[in-house]
Image 1 (cartoon, rainbow, N blue to C red):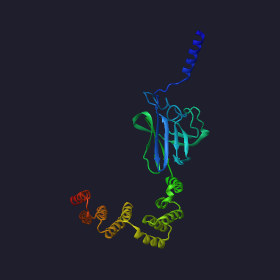
Image 2: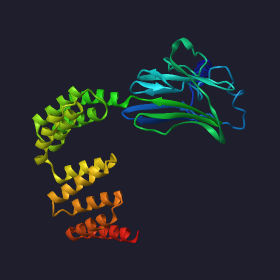
Image 3: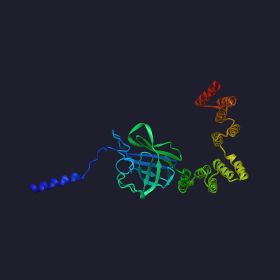
Image 4: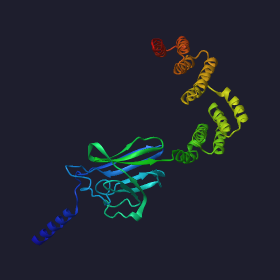
Length: 344
């Protein structure tokens, strides 16, 4: 019995030694994502601390691959094709490694994502390599961090910051190309059963350099489902861009009876946003004439006139809008606008 007890204790001890407890990590795990247009970029990493150590050239040696973090591979995932530092990279997940030096760094995107650190890093497995010059920062970052700076619909800058160093990695995406590929798939699903889906696709193609024949096909399909001002007018714009001015004019004339007040005001505001102020004001005036009982039409005209610097015209339009408005909230807003104009 005694021998059996000793054997059992030894077995339990061996099992205990084989197990590892889940305890707080000295370099906690982190994940950061940024959407660029329709593209998701995600960095997964661990965050070491300075903890009073000399980082660059000592804890992180120069001229040796470094994992850009702690523990297992730092990884970066792109949901679509992208461009990093001017170098194309395919959609997918990559091990993110760096080669620090006292001057320029090399950033490597490895096809292997399951390594522990950079100990088994092999340059033959790189999908892309770029050269980046780090900068010295005024304040120190105690824990290493990734962040995304200056995001737009077509790009962002991924920044690695630790101690008094920041390494910026530019990321760009051909968002119109990505969006068009996505829309083509969406139109094969529920979006393809509405006139709005095809109208939006036609308008996006037109605005972002898509194939005009394809855009015209979308507009035609939308109109065949249900004619509206939006799909008729985008068809006219496509014809215009194709150089068919006569057909475009006929299409615009066909669209006009379908236009609502909101449609026409949206057109006018779009012209105003494109800095076509004279055209915008002419459209606002036409809307106000077409809808003489609309305080909103007069209000919109007043805004446009004020933007153009026509103070008397804006005051006159705001005064008409105030006389037509019914709700107390609208009246108060118009009164404030008039007071600001008169006091300026």
